[in-house]
Image (cartoon, rainbow, N blue to C red; front, side, top):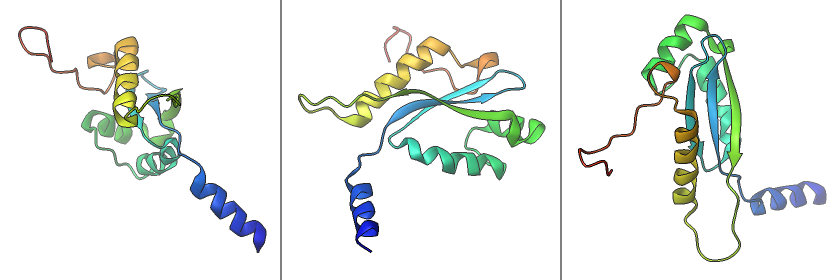
Length: 124
């Protein structure tokens, strides 16, 4: 019983890992790049795909066409926790996601992400 209590306590004290991941369609190479504050939630996203559901309409259409087995989840980068200063994890994660979106360009025919909106002056 003590071991179980110790494991529960350790699980509560463990901080979840935040990171950026991609859902890749192995049939056509299209990507969806997203981020999460808890990478352990990816299992739930896999279940969601297995049920044929997803928020992204284009991915959902390919999911119906190719099936859930055509999609793989890959962690691109885990957010490094900094010990000095105060950092909003959510903001740091969005910046990390923006780096990966810029690097992979998963828009239009290359992926499922919507292009970031830019105003006429080129600033968001």
